[in-house]
Length: 196
Image (cartoon, rainbow, N blue to C red; front, top):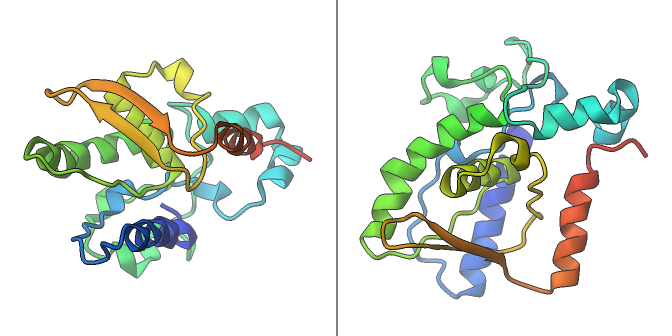
C-alpha cells in the first residue's frame, strides 16, 4: 500500500488500453489491489536494507507468506492513515505493515465480489496491479502452498494470461512475450532483496 507506487499500475493499465485502442473501457480502481504494505521498510533501498539486516532476513520480510516486516509508525507521513487516498477506507483496515497473508486477505474479497462476477457474466478482465497483490491472487486461484509462494517472482509490466475453467477454478497461466526476456525480468525481481 505504499503511496509512491500506487500510480504505476494505473500507468500500466492506461498503456494497455491505449495499445488496444480501447481507452474508453470502464475502469474500476480499488485499494485492495495495491502493493503490499512494507511497513518500516517502505521507501528504503533494498540493497542497503539487505546489507544491514542480511539477505535471508530481507527475503523473509519481502517474500514469505506469514512474516510481516517491522511496522510503520502511525504518525509517519507514509502511513496509509495519513494518505488522503485512503480517506474512505475504514481505519481498522489500514495496516501498519503486511505479510503476504494479509495481502491475500484484502485481495480475495475484491476477487469474489467484483472480478469473478464479471468473468462469470462473460466479460474478459484485465487486472493491472502490483507484484504482491498479483502473487496473492495467484496463491488463492492456484492454491500455491505457503512455502512455494516465496519463489514466485512476477516480472514487472509483463502481461500474464490466466485461463480459468468454467467454474473459475485455475486452469493455466503463461506470460506473453520473449521467454528469455521474461526469465531475466523474473530473475531481476528475485535479486531485488540482495546486497550488492
